[in-house]
Length: 110
Image (cartoon, rainbow, N blue to C red; front, side, top):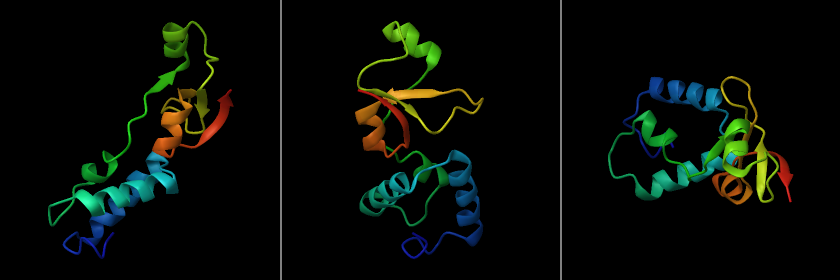
C-alpha cells in the first residue's frame, strides 16, 4: 500500500498500524480493504478513515439485541464472533455477512 500511495508520510502508516491492531482486523479483511482501495480510490493521498471505513457491511448484535430481535440468542444462520465488544461482551452476526466481511467466527449456529 505504501508503494501505491507514496505521498503518505511514514507516521501515517504507523498510526494506521496501531488502529488496525486495536480494531483486531483479520488478514482477510485487510486484503479486502487493500483490494478495494487500489481499485477505487481516486485521490493521491489517503485518510485513515478511508481505510478503516472501507469494509463490507455486517450488522453486529449484542446478546441483548439478539434476544430483543429474535427472542433468543441462538439463531440458525447466525454466529458468535471471536472479536469481543470494547466492553468484552460477546458479539453476534449473520454467518454469511460475517464470512463476506472476513470476520473471524468463534461458533456457528447451524
